[in-house]
Image (cartoon, rainbow, N blue to C red):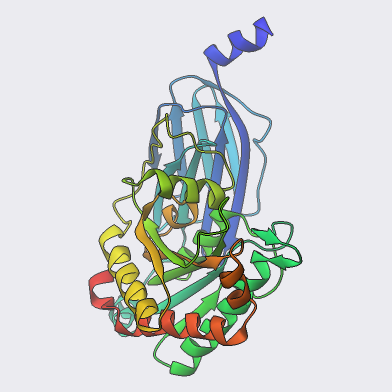
Length: 330
């Protein structure tokens, strides 16, 4: 035990390195044992992370689109082709450095045409696969979110004014980093993550809407603990190092619109606020997470099993998207 403690004071431990590839976009999630100071830089075909201590890891191996080279304090990721952009951000608990790299080289004609493209909407049905989400009896969050997402997808697709995608269209498990990475790879304009809530009290009911913010209430932190899949301690600050690309004001604007549409359809909105949600922290677009009801409440539970209610929710979100000012998000 003494040797292990000593080694941790001398070395930085990289616990895991995962990658998610979507066409010309790659996200690399580097999980650390603890928070550590580092410098980030990028070249034509590599990115470099320089820590303040020597690195220990068993994860330096060749991946599909890159290979990892570690020497002393330097972790270098080499790619086989030229990078068009490289960005990073940090999430805590567990401490991860998330690196996003694109290889798409845009020509002048592409840049001109990109101004005429349809807005891209990505719908994210929460949980899935081995992660059922909130459960009450045989009722599972992952099934409800998928049904709702499919209804919303059809509404947006039939509209014809948007390009729309889903992070999953079946009972499939996705990492939180993978969901937002997919949205970024599609050059998403709006990201909607759909969830179902739960609470210790059976009295809690209604909808809730969240956007990512570094400023949040104790309640928002509790919701984030559940959705992030980790225990967040309110006695310790949750420090994110987030890119300036994140669109908090635009996300709040969309949250306002969704809340208004819910009220217009007679659905209670318990709260609309910022929260430290990992799935939203990883997006570079307008992004909100919508809790469409409490599985632990009898009245909400009956609604969540009703096709007409799920369609009402889908229509409300669709109406909000239609009213959203996409010019502000560009």
